[in-house]
Image 1 (cartoon, rainbow, N blue to C red):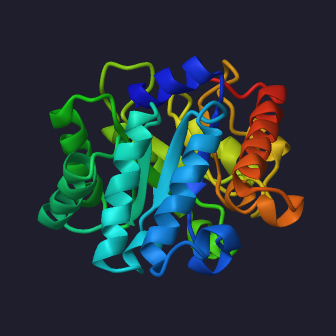
Image 2 (image 1 turned 135 degrees about the horizontal axis):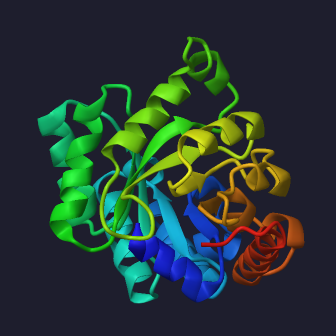
Length: 281
């Protein structure tokens, strides 16, 4: 996780910009310049990267939005990973993969070694087999990356599954993160995805994982707020990277201005709000 931690400290920002590009919501001035969705998506996302580079510590690419565009969409995905690296922004591959060992190893190699993301999100439903290959790839690459395991997610139906048993599934997932995490950085190389929309659960996960780095979705468009983030902070007031996707990408829809200036303004406001609750690394 050290590459994320170093970037967050350098920028004094706990904010991550999520790239979830919907071709149907691209600015007209971008769409009009291209005959193919993949090229329009690339221009839009590249423009957002350039706009927010000074406000965010990292970017999170949701692979599904690029996979839906076919082979050219994955070329866009690869290009944006490279572009982000050129701008000094580590990439979190939001792939949420979870499969048996050999398959998980192939996913890990694809996104961490071939595409070059620093970190990836992983589903723990299949246990250690689904997570360890990603950690092994991170450790093999020795690039300061990490793995974020889905623990307590921000989607509305998550409690029906993650809180249905005793102990709750999210506690079992948190224990897996604690047990598998290692490395020599400031945080273990296994972190947890913990949503800002469930602060009471987040507090419990923080009790179970006092040293872990949390990737926090649900902030902004999904209803999570600064108070929800505050519940996830560690004893030093840090330990979180907070993602905002739609709130940054589509800020121009509310502002009426250019998409780059709107994205920059939205990212700056979110960064400053997170600083206000003490979120730092």
